[in-house]
Length: 284
Image (tube, rainbow, N blue to C red):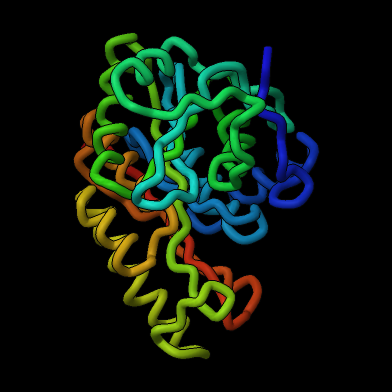
C-alpha cells in the first residue's frame, strides 16, 4: 500500500511509538485532562508537541466514544483564499504507531461531489498542520481510517465540511471531525505587530485578537470564522476551522466548548509568538 511517509517525526513530535506514548500520557494528565461529552468534532493547534501538543491531544482524546469510530476526517493546511482544496486519494499515512489507512470509498464519494485536487501519497505535501495530528489519531482510534483534506479560507470551506459528512452518512460511517489551526502569529518574525511589543502585545493577542476568533468558533458561524482569519490574522487555517464547524453542525452539534487556550510565549518568551486554542463541538 502506498503511504505518505512521516516528515516531522523526531522534530515536531517524537520519532518512536514509546516516546510518543510517554508524551501522550503526560498530556492527558495536564489541567483538566480530556472533556467528557457527546463531541462530534474539535479544533486543534498544530505547533510542535512541545508547544501545543497537550491541547491537541486532549481535544482528540475527548472525541472518543463507546461506539466504534470508523473514520476520522481531518481538515487543515496553510492556504490562501484562492487556493484549490486538495485531498489524499488513497493509501495510508505513516505514524510511529503504525499506518492509518485512507477511507478510499469515502474519499471517492467526496471527490465525485466537489472540485478538489487529487493528491497521491507520493505527491501529498509535507504539512505540519496535518502530520502532527496523525500520531494522536492512531493512538486513540487505532482501527479508524482517515480522510485528509486541505481547505482554503473561503465560503467553499463550509460546503466541503457539510458535503463530506453527507457522503459519510450515505456510507453509514460513524465519523469524527478534526480541524487544525493555530491562532494569531504575532511579532516581527511574522510581520504582524499592531499592538507594539512586550507584555501589552501578549495581552492584546490573548484577550482581544484570539478571543474574537474563539468567539466566532463558539458561535459556530462559518462566515465569521473566515472573516476573522482573513481580516484579523487570528487563524492561520480559518478554512479548516470553518469546514470543521460546518461538518459538526451537519452531524447535529449545537454547542461549543473551549477546552483550553495557551500561547508559545508561556513556553518560550519571545517578541514573536503564537496562540493555540482547543475547541470541541457537542450534540447538546
